[in-house]
Amino acid sequence: MIQEELEKWSEDEVVASEKKSQNLSSIAPPPRTWLERKTPTGNIPEALLGSGNNNGGCQIGGGIVADYKRRNPYFLSDFTDGLSWKTLSASIFMFCAVVTSTVALGDLAYRETDKKVGITEYLLLQSIAGLIHASFSACPLPILRPTGPITAFMIDLNRLALWIGAGYFTLLSWVGFWVGSFTICVAFFDWSKYIVLCTRFLHDIYAVFVCTIYISDGILEVAQRFQEVPWIEAFFASYLFMFCIFLATALYYVDRSTILKQSWRQIISDYALPISVVICIFISYSVKDNVNIARIEMPPKFEPSDIDINNGNVRSWYQGLTPGEDSQIGMAAIASISFVAAIPIVALFYIDHLFSCILGQKPELGLKKGEYYHSSMLIMGICNLILPSFGLPFVTASLPHSPQFTKALTIYNKSKTPWEVVKVHESRIAPTLVYALCLCGLVFPSVLEMCPGGVVNGVLTFVGIAGILPGTGNQLMDRVLLLFTAPSGFPSATANSAVAPYSELPWYRIHLYTIIQLACLAGCWGMRFAGPYSLAFPLVVVSFIPLRLWILPKLFSQNELSVLDADERHQHLQQVNNNNGKSVV
Image 1 (spheres, rainbow, N blue to C red):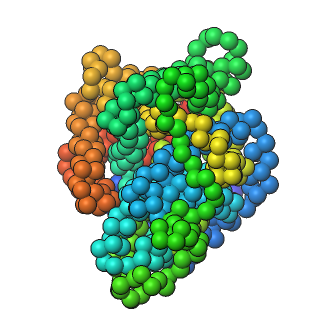
Image 2: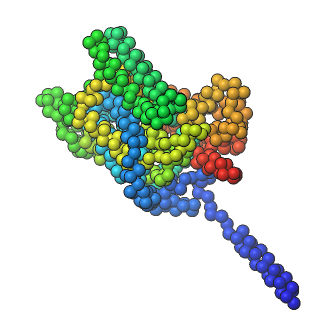
Image 3: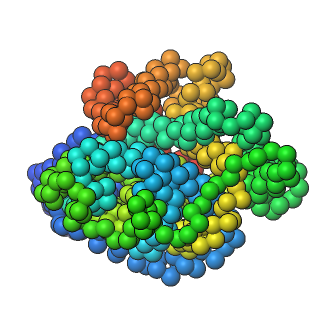
């Protein structure tokens, strides 16, 4: 009797389980959105989705609110984690990296905009926008600054203002109004999520493009001196340029040597760039009686650069949207023209800012406080909406400074290959210190005036080189070296899968993928020499998206693309699970 009851109960359980399975199978999976279907990696970070969901829902400002909700638990640690010597060394390194570039770009803008905008405006913008972002953004680490393309836009806006008969600062204010408004809309409507269509294929190309610009600008500036100053001065500037690069590189890699104690090697490596700059400055002063040395020329007073040549009056800081007496066209015409002029700037900022945030928050960098995008875009938009009305340039997050800053704040276990992240000192103190030091450059200009021009060029070139050195995370440069390596010297598929996940592929397939990326890089550089059309280079970058979505899948199998263009967060998860004895499908 008991046996019959047990068998009956067992049969009932089986039937109930089958019905439950049928009911579950009858429930259709949630429909995939267009973005999920088109994303090459099939993986959209939740931090980028913002308030959107799998059904395509959207809530205005939801991504911004989600950013601050996820960051709120770290409010106290955003300050306590900055109480470290690592914070000091990283801040000084980044100050040296950004202030030299900002001063060089400000000087270029001063000469090319008929002295309307200069070093004062550039450093002031760097400080104000950076301090606001470091204080109020959910991700304070990305470095905000006026970049080279922004300077090109500032110069072209001056030419446009002269051509249409509008006041330069009125036109700048209106362009800033549209740029800021568009970027704020991007933040509020969670449009940042569409950056997932740009995979590592494009990240690596763009990072190399930006870094090689720094390298070429530094070298060309040194070469140009041979045409402008006596050869003895040009030769000495070249010597300082090369000595700064070689010394900074040698000190940067001293922690991989066996000389001195480990703690001393780490200190020297952390302060490699500032030590090199200080030594070069001492060398320059040791020969000042024999060689005329060009140094940074800072404005004598803290005031706007634009001075009326007729009466010597300095312009007021606030300019506003209302055309001045010198304008030959009305406000409606200026607003319409500036609307069109703002479009390529917004396209550039969308790519530049989000790429900087993505590459500065990669999973392998070891950040523990999460990823944030929408709040950073909002802060950047607000700065571009307001600050150009005061005659200041535009601002966006910068490559390669943003990921370099994160790495400078990181403590590594260097006994393992690749290096294992022990801790990243994520805080608001570190970026705040960087921007405060930039502001001090305006308050105490004589300190910056000690730096020779050749050293400035050396720092620019070093920053570019450090961003693309093999083994620093840019797989395009790693694979470029393989073009000159015998197949027998390729990374082992078993020993280096974490470092080079593509090592399991045939070498000719790896080379084909690398050559395609180099061709795209050549396209970006071609736009640099396209005259007035060079500002359209963001459209060239955008054109690589359909290349990745539709052309590459016809040339490579899905398996090949999964390792050549692997989503970095998937590689990171795979490495962690492999270390735990698990596998990822």
